[in-house]
Amino acid sequence: MERGIERVLIPESEIQALVARLGAEITSHYAAKDELDLLVVGLLRGSFVFMADLVRKIKLPLVVDFMTVSSYGDSKNSTGNVKVVMDLDESVEGKDILMVEDIIDTGNTFNKVIGLLRHRKPRSLKICTFLNKPSRRVVTVPIDFCGAEIPDEFVCGYGLDYAQKYRNLPYVGIVKPL
Ligand code: IMP
Ligand code: MG
Image (cartoon, rainbow, N blue to C red):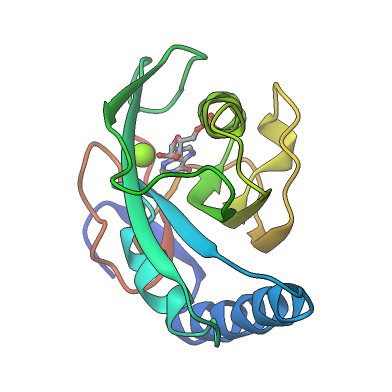
């Protein structure tokens, strides 16, 4: 076990299985459409590992783009104060947007980003999150594809950080309380 990690919450093998399941769900959802112009949008930095695995399980033509937003708060809590640090390169208008997030916690960050992208008039907008912490939700986020629901614990690994560390762990672990 990595120093600073109390225990494993989701082992690597389970992650691979849930990503494969999500990829299949997403593929069958979009495969049913007559017209498709799929743009998969990941929020940096947390989604980068999940994105890399997920897009390889989506068996459809797609374009990948990333966006960085900063949400002010302390290291464990976000606020509704979201600033775009790096915007998308691709245009959104008329496209089928699939937003990919590492974890939806209070919902503050994602709620703001969804509003921002809706404003750019996509043809459709769906939301996929690797993890969901429903007990912490402050604002409603309409999640279409969800990897796993987790209890109210601060987790890291598989892209998720604690003070920018642990993103490279291949599993999801619970951070040791200080
Ligand atoms: P929200 O705005 O509260 O939904 O928080 C979303 C962001 O907070 C996520 O994109 C993560 O970057 C971060 N976050 C929330 N919970 C956790 C956690 O348990 N571990 C690591 N990052 C988290
Ligand atoms: Mg983060």
